[in-house]
Figure 1 (cartoon, helix red, strand yellow):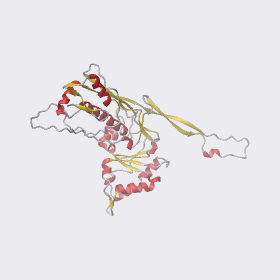
Figure 2 (spheres, rainbow, N blue to C red; figure 1 turned 90 degrees about the horizontal axis):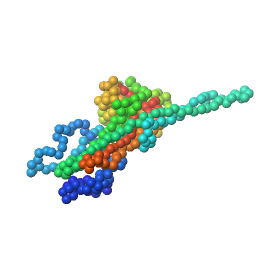
Figure 3 (cartoon, rainbow, N blue to C red; figure 1 turned 45 degrees about the horizontal axis):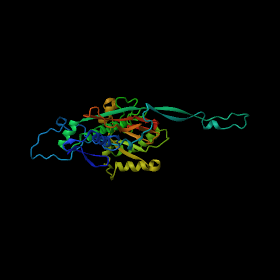
Figure 4 (tube, helix red, strand yellow; figure 1 turned 120 degrees about the vertical axis):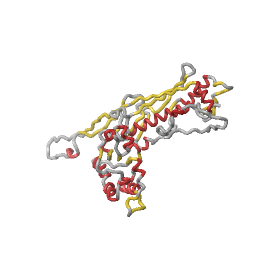
Length: 368
C-alpha cells in the first residue's frame, strides 16, 4: 500500500479500495506535507558514484527476490555556512539589492582640538562623520518539481519509495549545496556581484608565511611559521583587531595530529597551535576549522590560481560587521497545484546574496 506521513507523523494511505483517494483529499494531503517553509531535511551527497543507467522501478526479480524496505541516499561534502560566518535571514525580502551604510569619521583629528588660550576669538575645530553606502546584490532563485498519477501508482507497486517526498528532498539538496558553494566560493557565474568567503575582493593575500602544508613542516619550519602568522594578520589589520577564526584546508587540518618535533612527541601540532593562539589572542577565543574549499581541486572552479586552484588558508575576525551572507527570502515552497488533475507541480523559491565584506583588512588569505 502506497502511503505518506502527514504533518503529524501519522501514516496515510493514498490508495483506497484499489483506487487513488479523491482529488480534493489528495491535494489537501500534498499541501499539508509539502507546502510552506522547509528548514529541516539534512541533505547528504556522493558526487556521481551512482549508476544512473539503472534508474526506475522496472527491474527483474523472481519469487526468491526480497526488496529491502530501507533505501540509501547519496552523501555529499556538507558544512553549515553559519558555522563559518554570520548568515542573516529574512531581512530585505524581495528587494533587488540591499544597502548597508558604513559610518566613517571625517573632519579634524584629536590634535586639532588643542585650544590656544592666548588667541582672541579662536575658532573651535568641528568633528564630523559621514556615511558610505555598501551595495549587496540579491539573486532570485526558483525551482519546480512535477509528478503525475502514473508515478504515484507505479510507486505503489514498489511500496518502499515515495517519489514525491524524494523529489522534494532532491530539490532541497540542490538548494542547500548551492548556497553552501555560494557562501564559500561565490556564484561562479558572477563572482563580481556574488563573491564567497574564499573569493572576496580587496582582501590581501600573503604568499610568504605559509609555503607548504603545515602538517608537512619540520620543526624549524613550524617554529618560524608559528611566530609569523598572527603578526602578519595584525600588520594587515593595521594593529586594530585580532583574529578569532582560522579556516584551514581540510587535508592539512587532518594531518595536524603529527607531533611538533621528535623532542616533543606527545604534543601535536594542532594542540600546540590552539594553546599558543589562545595564550596570545585577548580573551583566548579562537577557532581552527577545517574547510575543503581551501583545496585547489575544489576552489579551481572559482578560477583561483588562474583556474588551476590554490591552497588557501583564511585567517579572519569573525564578526557580523566584518563579513556575512544574506538570505532575504529563505527556502520556501508554494502549494501543490494542478491544471488537469493528472500532472502536479509546486515551486520552491528563495533569494540569496554573496558574502558581504565590509572590512577587508580584517581578513587575510595565506596562499601557496
